[in-house]
Amino acid sequence: MLTKTYEMDINGRRLVLETGELAQFANGSVLVKFGDTTILSTATASASERPGMGFFPLTVDYEEKMYSVGRIPGGFFKREGRPTENAILNGRAIDRTIRPLFPEDLRRDVVVSNLLLSVDYDFSPKVAALIGTSAALAISDIPWNGPVAAAQVGLIDGEIIVNPDYDDYCDSELDLYVAGTREKIMMIEAAADEVPEDVMLAAIEAGHKEIKRVCQLLQQMKDEIGKETFEFASAEASQELHSEIKDRYFDQMSEVVLNPDKSQREAAVAEISKAISEYLEEKDPELVGFVGELTEAVEKAAVRHHLTHNQRRVDGRGLDEIRELTAKVDVIPRVHGSSLFSRGQTQVLSVVTLGTLADSQRFDGVNPEERRRYMHHYNFPAYSVGEARGGRSAGRRE
Image 1 (cartoon, one colour):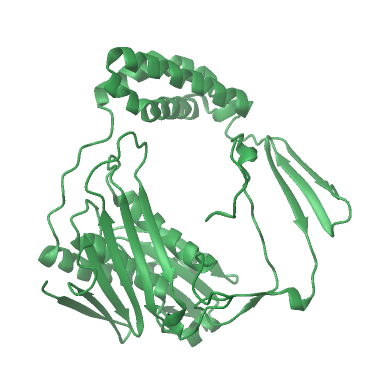
Image 2 (cartoon, rainbow, N blue to C red):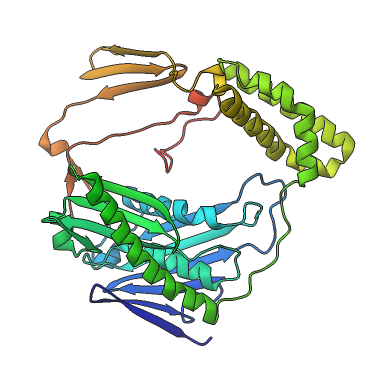
């Protein structure tokens, strides 16, 4: 396959995008070089739709390899294990940026992978990974309304710096990550000292200006070497069927969504969903696969109607009403500290433990070695939402 290289200058440093040499069986693949930071970004789609799937099955992986920083993994087996917290967060940042640009009715599996091959701390892998993802999708045959790009923005001595080097990043009062298209900002992540609003807006604008430049290069890649997008069977119900189901079940759903008890409300919605399923079974058995989509559409229409016409939210609350708040402390004996906070039927049980400096957490990842003295662990057990599922290890959102 013919290799192709695209380059541009970013603050006096080179961004290089190479395609055609690696991962030739992927729908789209790009090797990103941002300084010495090197990432292989690939995008792959299944050959057929997944029947009965009620959502777009997109998976985004961001893989950190210890060899990228010249280290050997710790532990007995001396190889990488589960993704680090940093890798999970970077993958989710990419997911949030690219997901809205896929067709809503696409039901083919799409997997985006970013393999971190080498790290230059002066060149953000997080920025490079999104640019590589965007390039891989742009030149592939996967339907996608990109390109997108990202920029990291810092504030040093009152000066806004786009994509700062590592020394400036460490001294920055602002750590801003901006992602978007040429027209709009798609996502913002930020951590900062106290920064005036006008400075924050100026930093976002500076980041978007750089995003526009990168998107121009990505659009050039798409125009010159991009594949023709494949056609796919729409997995959405017709507008006629949506209107028919809405007319039949809207009034019933409008009463249900105002029930203040979540368990009763969900049970009532399930009954309506069952009625829709039985109706579709009689009408045409092949339509039963749209039950979830149609139920959600009717529920959404009912909630929206109450919001816009009656100024009432789900469970009947007004726009300015909040659920009852309660708080208790010392709810568990012997532990260093505990509390129970409730907002309506949502509850959080918190426990705190005070340790020594020797208990601080050391990270075995590609970032410069650091220790964390404050650790916050979040668990989302199945019983908290009434699901019958056994215990397991912490998930990607825990």
